[in-house]
Image 1 (cartoon, rainbow, N blue to C red):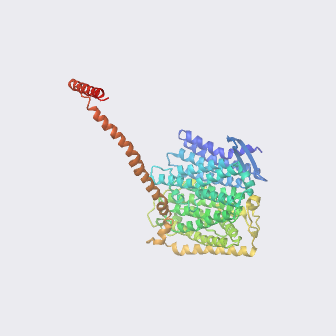
Image 2: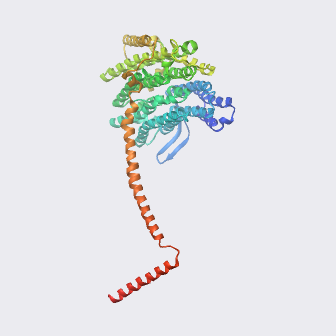
Image 3: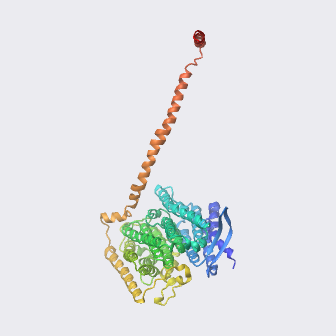
Length: 622
């Protein structure tokens, strides 16, 4: 099997995206969208065909040397191993379904070529992150997903709020990118290379303090891309983009990049207990924070946005607890059911005639029973219904945290358990408000195109059956993903079967409790006045106001001072004063030039008198 074909996995969507960018509007629409879908589908097919190359130690293939300066050598080198292969397959397969969905969603959009070109470029950038065996090449993909998110979130840039949301995502994630950039420079100075394989292999020689500092820098970079505390404010506003963009960002690409970075460099990260604890704390805190915010949101996609933030927090908790397999398991199942939920939310908005407010919805089950059942499948996975993919993957994370048996991780496990209850509560709140009862507002929607419905079916099946990827031995499973990852899987929690059954019983009780509370509160919901606590959660704990108070306004004040006080008053004042002085002197000299002969003769006479007077004084006074 020709290993060089691995390069086609990221290059196919890049080529199709470039073709659409250059010629998309000149081609028939069917050809343009077929190119876009074909680019993602081709990557998925190639990943599946080349899967045997991931066995053993994996396959590394170099295309050419990108940069070479002194000891710095940056090859375009891909690593297709047991960690990158499942990730690449998930990214390409889910992206293909999102592209198919986008064909129907964007059918009335005039500038479709730009949209599909950026969508393909997004997939290329994410696959570059996943497959790269060089940190600088990974950073290229890292910045690529940042650019694509900016361009796609602000796709409808004629509306100021959409353009602002794109800029906000770009700027906030750049903060995290600074941390990652510093980490890369430091790693190069330590090892003389940016090869991921070499860095992981040699990380054990570094001092503990250096390992901790590097881990915290990598965590800072991951927090930016994965919208974790404190760099999480961009994600809810990212809903300004078209729904396929939201599905791509939240399910298959951008927010999972940070988790994958920590898993890819886990041999380095795992050497710092302090670093692992920091990752776990950030993950648990973000999971709880986002779950409380999701409880109060009124826009359907913002509920799912905060849900994504919370679920990615669980993945961080898994990495911090030392279990890469648990983090990757939840990453994969979450990609299936969250893509399903976002795309279903787009269908809901379509049925509701563009209405986003779930307080105005209701009764949509009657309008589209199939959509209801598909949405319910995703909701069951998100809420952790027993035997669903989300149940097994979330339980694996909580089990990994519980197995650490330290006071800190016991606390984080408790936070994770409480967050699981909140997850079930806000998920069924969303389900009841959208589909149950009667519409609380006149909704004049549209019929759903088939291309918007049928891509949801395989995602529903994958979400519900995703537990088979890592079904625990307690149920006769083989924990396939954990064994497939092998040495890359991290720690395997060791607890008794009785305790595991008890934790499953607790998870089932949390799911049932959340569902029952939501049913009692929201089955016959009537909008009322929102209290202070709900407004606090609705505003994301006023995080934007806090950032504005601590960073934006002080920065604006300092900038205003240097603008008015230094630039205008001092620099421009001095320059303008000098200019006015020279201009005044010129004006006064100009009055000597009158054009009258009598004035010139008078000036010559006075000049002669002055000269003679000066000469006589020099003669008389030695």
